[in-house]
Length: 144
Image (cartoon, rainbow, N blue to C red; front, side, top):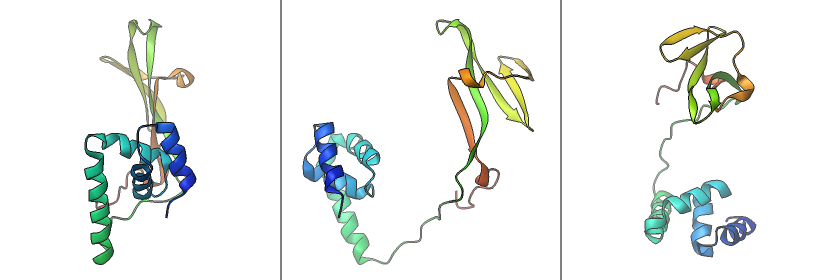
């Protein structure tokens, strides 16, 4: 079953789906409300058809042998900052964006055709941060 509290909360907060539609999405997304909401909105064009496909898929998978899945690369889930994008200029209407990447433990700035070491990258003022998972860096699962 699914948590009816999650179902009712989504029905009330989203306001455009029925209880049955939300219940099917929550069940499909293993109870994750945010994923269920995303699933509902991404299938709005033919929501009833998508739910019917879920139900027929669930029936078929219950009667067939379990399929082998690619194992997830679980672990500590710790990440390291490896890059960032920041802006140089008075405002977003003027100036331009630059990238800073960590290479061999040192920060490097990429500013158009200019590439140089960066002693003090503007980490606290970046617009976008790039992280790499520590326990899978350089060794993705062979099935990927």
